[in-house]
Image (cartoon, rainbow, N blue to C red; front, side, top):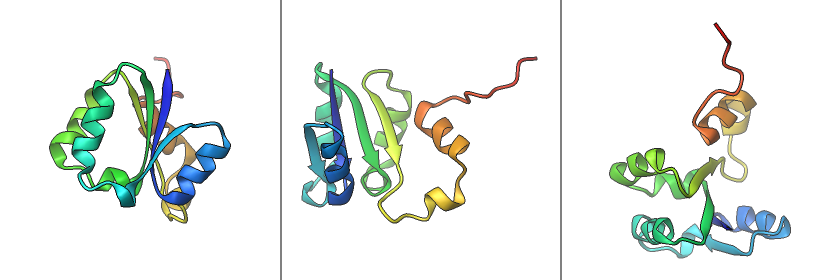
Length: 107
């Protein structure tokens, strides 16, 4: 399974250094929804990493669709230099990325 990154040039460069081979700069994509739809249909894609800038380019229907799709997994990360990391706790970032709370109390 492939990991695909869509985001800023800085994010893509960092993920390339980490071993991600397929990446797209969001500045080069004319229609983010159509591009993402194509990736969702591919059988070889297991994880799609989007930065906040790429995510904000999606319409509401595509945002709803990626929240409910099981495969591939879609992870959103803060933009390079974003204040999101400072204002949002790590726990909240993990919950947003995974879709559930890891530290949910047992009752």
